[in-house]
Image (cartoon, rainbow, N blue to C red; front, top):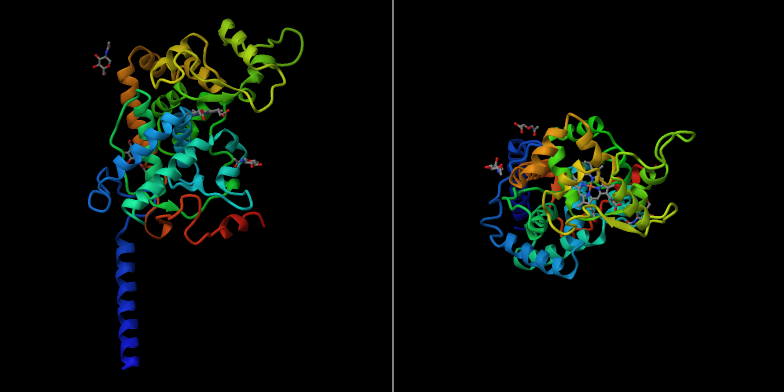
Length: 350
Ligand code: HEM
Ligand SMILES: *[C@@H]1O[C@H](CO)[C@@H](O)[C@H](O)[C@H]1NC(C)=O
Ligand SMILES: *[C@@H]1O[C@H](CO)[C@@H](O)[C@H](O)[C@H]1NC(C)=O
Ligand SMILES: *[C@@H]1O[C@H](CO)[C@@H](O)[C@H](O)[C@H]1NC(C)=O
C-alpha cells in the first residue's frame, strides 16, 4: 500500500517535471520576456495602489525618496538587468550595492522598495517580484514630483546574482563624453535620444561635491595658461558651486543637481545646460556635442516632448535584461535570495 502510493507520487512527480520542462522550453529566453501592464490583474490586482500608497507616505517623510528611487531603478537595470539585484544585501559586502558607485545610492530608495514589498506581501504573498515593485515605485516618484505618468510593464522575476565586481564599467561616470555615454546606453538597446531623455532625471536629486570638484579646481592640464575652472561653466554658477564645495571637501556635502527647480520633475535641466549650468561634464556635454544638442534644445523648448521621450525611454529601460523561468524567482525578502545563494558572489572572489 505504502509502496504503491510512493510509486504513484514518484510517477506524478515525473509528470510534473516533464510538464515544467515543456513550459520552460516554451518560455522565451531571458531578455525577451513578455512584460505587460496587467501582468498581476488576477493574482494581485491592487499591487499598484498598494505600492503607490507606500511611496506617497515615504515621499512625504523625505523628498530624497524621489531621486533615490529613480536612480536605484537605473542602476539596477544597467547591472544584471532590471531584477532587483542591486537590493541584495551581502554579509561580506560584495554584492552589487557594495561596489564603489554605491556611495551615491541613498538608503531611501532601498527602504521604499522594502516597505512596499512588506505591504504587497500582506495582500498577495509570494506573487510580486521586488524588481516589479521597484519599477512601479520609480514611475510613482516621477509622477509625485509633477513629472509624467505612464503604464509600467510588469512580469519581471528577481535575479539570482548580485556581485560588486559586476558593476565596474557598466554605469556611466560624470566625466564621460557623449560618444562613450551613447555606446554604454546602446549596449541596452537605448538610443542617444533615450540617453538624453533619461539624463533629464538629473532635474531632481543631489550630487556629492567630489563628483564635480575637478571641474571647479583642477580643470585642464597643470601649468601656465591652464584654466582652473572649466570654462564651460557659467561663471556665477561656478562661484555658487565653489561656495558650497570648498577644494578639499569630503564625501558629506551634496548640492542640488537642478539649482532652479530642485524638487520638480520638469525640463529645467535642459534649459540649465544651454546656460552653462550642467553640473557634471557628462551633463554639459549633452549640449556641447552635436550628436545630442538637437534633443537638448527640443526638450528645453517643450516639456511635453521631454515627458513623451522620458516615458518611452523608461519603458525601454525597464525591459533591460529581464529574467524569466529558472533565471529568477519571486524573492520573499527583497534584500536576500530565497536560498541565500551568496555562493555566487563568493565564487568570484576566489
Ligand atoms: C547619462 C549618464 C549619467 C551619469 C554620468 C550619471 C551620473 C550621476 C552622478 C555622478 C550622480 C551623483 C551621485 C552622487 O554624488 O551622489 C547622479 C545622481 C543621480 N542620477 Fe545620474 N547619471 C546618469 C544617468 C542617469 C539616469 C539615466 C538616471 C535615471 C533615469 C539618473 C538618475 C539620477 C538621480 C535621480 C540622481 C540623484 C540621486 C540622489 O539624489 O540620491 N542618472 N548621477
Ligand atoms: C559602499 O561601498 C564601500 C566600498 O566600496 C563599502 O565600504 C560601504 O560599506 C558601502 N556602503 C553601503 C551603504 O553599502
Ligand atoms: C531594440 O529596440 C527596437 C526599437 O525600439 C525594438 O524594435 C527591438 O525589439 C529592441 N530589441 C531588443 C533586443 O530589445
Ligand atoms: C510641444 O510638443 C507637443 C508634442 O510634440 C506639441 O503637440 C505641442 O504643440 C508643442 N508645443 C509647443 C508650444 O510647441
